[in-house]
Image 1 (cartoon, rainbow, N blue to C red):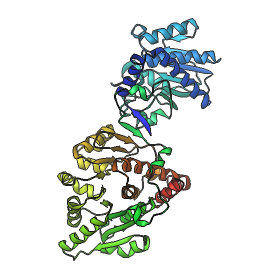
Image 2 (cartoon, rainbow, N blue to C red):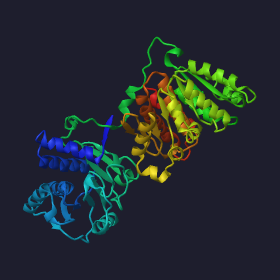
Image 3 (spheres, rainbow, N blue to C red):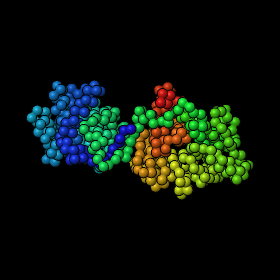
Image 4 (cartoon, rainbow, N blue to C red):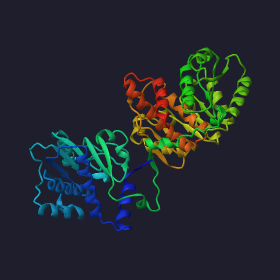
Length: 499
């Protein structure tokens, strides 16, 4: 797993490295500049004529050190200072003194020449207010310049904490950041400004956290080793039972996608509880699943007795996909929250029912995973979608804590928040997955992992990551325009075949 940090955490790690471990700040600055040079060489960026725009803080000091290293490799580098030099940090002043000794050109006005590379070393991760005035004009001029664009640590104008644009932002082709990924480089819209992101080691590691612990992570391919293991001497009962309560009349597709995804993820047996009208099509679509249906003429007690038997049988329960929001759906949801003892995945229409009855969540004392997309989250919380998007992570964490659930807040960069405050940002997936049924597939993946014995705090973020990887695999075969939910299910098979 990769650690992600906000600006405060990164500054604290930096401070601990300098103050406790006695690593001089100037050493970290030199290593940062070396890391940028390594990235330039790795990606074969033409830096034969480089303009480095430097602020007066230590991000600017990184830029001045970079100018010296570029010059020492035989290329041309020019420094443009933004701000008053008397306000510069001590490290920045020292770097400028060195640069002058090396006779590196230092300008105070934007040159009219053309450069092969424009480097942003203006603000770094400490920016917390809107960029205005001369600095905004300067960033806009940098964006208009020819040549490749590189940002040091984070594009200027982007919040390191949530990826929001603070007035305006530098558009980078490559961002070289240090020690850990910053949240603002992963979430939208910051990730679009950052371009490709490289993380470079500068001597800040796990020791620099001292008594503090990271709270935000992202999975990477090697973490597929966390998937439940298949043992030699087993049977279908060894890998758990998933109950999918889904599908009002005419909505068999959602039940199919969730049920098949759960099966493909590895659970031993899937049972779909659905409207009788869906029986024949589901028997054809997914003969591997057991069906248990309700008829509209059946009594409430008959349906609830059937539900209670199914809940006792299940190791994980899905409720919501295609279920509708009518009286039958509301009755089933209330009963599940009251009777279930296995982990729940609450999705789609079940969330819409909850939006007017959030107190129902408190009636369930076990592990519950809720999977709202932004529209559903808006209904659950009463906040407009655009407000939720401004702090995707914070809103997910707040909901998880308030209702003691695992909250998977779905967006282009899905956030998984645990009740204890730990959280994950998903980095897999693509825009081809914005297709009908994709969310139902995710719900099935989550239930499949839960049924096989993974705890919810691992099954939720790992399931989101696996779902995204499956979409990435599907994109290689279908492209983004033609991707269907069934392609994502096939992607699960492909991604896990060697796990």
